[in-house]
Length: 235
Image (cartoon, rainbow, N blue to C red; front, side, top):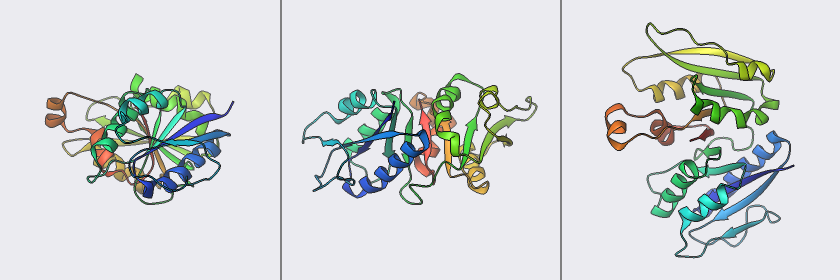
């Protein structure tokens, strides 16, 4: 059975790039059916003429439709949030990430869109949220040369180990320990992924109360703002 990969786009200029990323996901999963859900300024043609899709009319409840369509997909592909995004685009992203319960591939504004999945980093912590993001991604890792486990560890804490789920699936993995200190962990995470040559990052997405986010900062928030590589995340 083919995977259903839903591309969500409110900007025509982003559609070709997002479609290329969705087609790459289809290749990695073995077989994928890409669909486009577009809104905002109309475009004359879909990036791939034979790709099914729809353009939402003005006034549509974009967030509700993204939630409904996305909940039926295997993966959602969407652009990384940008400061210039309008309200509909921001609402669509939040709905895709927090209301569909599906893995979401967030694409940065530049860099390769159709070659990722060879050196894959995982923001690893031994908790249900990370496993929830990692397990659906396992079927994408057949072409992976190495899985790079990036594990944050506080001073005095026990050293992490390679998780059983990767060993059981026969996936080669190397463990890289990142010391957690007073510096923003999101910046450390993205920097180490870049230094190791990762072309994709897998992570759980965490949402806290606004006060908690303001006081503690947030790895998820930092990645949403600064990731320079495709990020597969799931809330």
